[in-house]
Image (cartoon, rainbow, N blue to C red):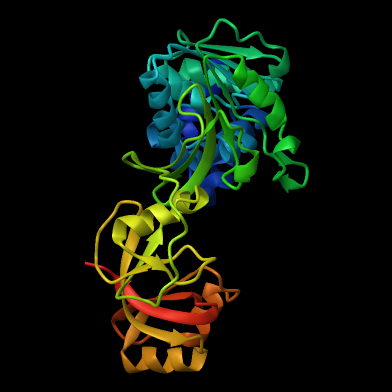
Length: 389
């Protein structure tokens, strides 16, 4: 019997309830006490699962995570629940009622699809991963909508489904895989599977080169709370479209195929586009919305003379524009009584923590400043400011 099987027994479930919320500092004492009444392996499995549930709460929320089952890789690689819910809603809005979820992992996307009322075939070739996905569907009361199958996704017939969703593995023995053809299964196979279905979505790494996106696909970059989470290639939607979607919201910026913005001198305001906007190459669209230009032709900072709040970029009011010089920055911060320094960078090799340590070694004041390490017309520069009000 493996750890999951043991945890699914009445004794295992009771033990999971008993160790729920155990803090790391108390694990040894709790384990010592429980091993007097339960097998040591079961106690270790329950405490290990509790640790995984605590880690997973950031992605799935405490309530769901507290009922679900996880593997270490499953926690690391699963889709954040808010992102999965957004994608499921897109499928539902497209009229999709059934999805073949290939490479389903522990079932995070299948759960979101089922909660949107969509019937799901969830497939994974790893026996333990498939068993965890099945346990999660049952734990959340969704087993009636989710069929979990242990199989090689390349051998599954998806012809009876409205849509296909493929989330290939993007990690290997040496960490993250950046070549789409090194995904498991390769991107070329996933594209082929997508072309056989009325609708499809392929989850890929946010850094995927734009030139490898098939002409008939729509490319969408998604961020959640400012963090870029994924890129998705959609089939059967808007061929050639490019969009950046920001969660919560959702707020979506579509490509207008605009020319590159002009490079100009720094204005009163600096706009920091969301990472999904940058990955989608939609900085020109932001510049157009705020009437601005770029500080440097190769850097995704937009500058403008007017404040025009937009949801796709964070606006800062700039007070100083200086050549890069740590001593001058240190003196300026001391003179203004700055105690909190936020360092952001694009196009600079300087590490923010290193600059913070050198420029503000002993914070004493009450002021707060944001410094942008970047280039202005090719020259290293520092822009000082604060979030625009």
